Length: 140
Image (tube, rainbow, N blue to C red; front, side, top):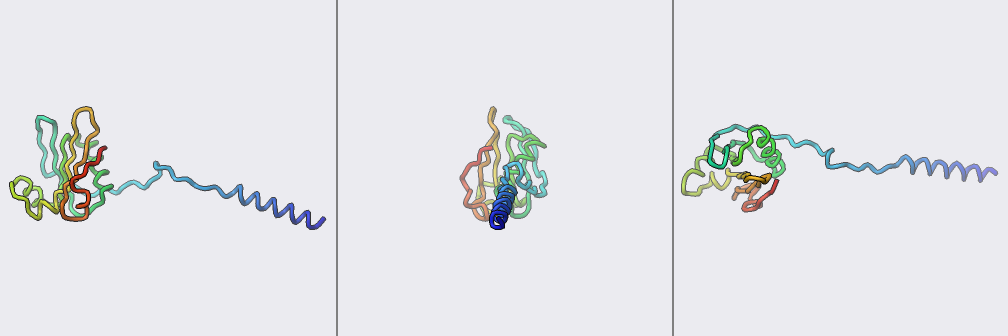
């Protein structure tokens, strides 16, 4: 009788434990929001294709941070062309025909939005943390 009681309590306790253990699944909606870096608009103009905006974003940031920043700027400024630089020297270097270190290190990306598309990010940094992305395209 006593062993039956212990067995029943053991089984009841085990079932209660198993019922209380649920695997928590994290949905993609619960991901931490990306902290966007400070930026400065260094150029803004109208072109035949729409608004063109150049941003100065000092520091080193991840691909995900830049993609989040592009999406935020699209919502706020609605450019059809967006360029991101880490320095004003890089911005000035793009205007010149010669490619220098400021250009290779500080020209991060170009975003272009054509009619009826969400747009594409073209990764430009040739020397630096995002150099592995240089020449690749991220579609939004």
